[in-house]
Image (tube, rainbow, N blue to C red):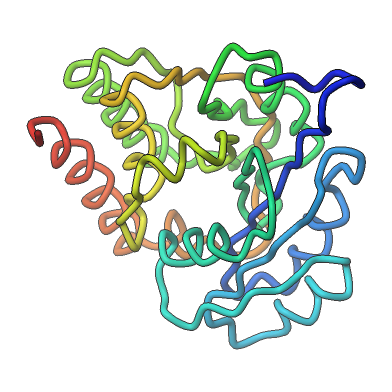
Length: 233
């Protein structure tokens, strides 16, 4: 995919699922590089605070998806995109740094990858919890064993060619969405790479890593999804 002046400009849509992120979402939207993103969509996943209003005030187009679930919110954003060649996903809690978008996009724009995943490098104490790190190592070990894909992280900050995402026919409604994308892309022979990105301590309490129940539930979905597609025809 070319991003040269002679070619049609590559249209990049940024999708940010958010649930009760009023304190952070405006900062996240404003940090998205305006010279890269053709549109920024915040998917309000049933927030009870002012997430939608803060996102809209910061310049995002807000999509309402009341059916809870990380994957459900991501898919709602995908379906709402008007026209894009590349889709970027990042979290609405400001742990991901939108300023890293050039690094995440570069392998795709240079024609060397179909899916790029930001490999999180903590830059603040507490950015990654111990159980997050342990769970991530377990999942990437399984992905390597079952799919032959060598990765250092499976984080939420990622970029993917729009036509590739359509081909993957994503289905997972909750926390398994990120790993579903990876394993389906690997099975179909798409090029999946990691690039290092700074990772900050989130604003507010995490719905996943902030509670034992959330961590266990997320871990279950990640592991189950990794195994689910390993032997499917």
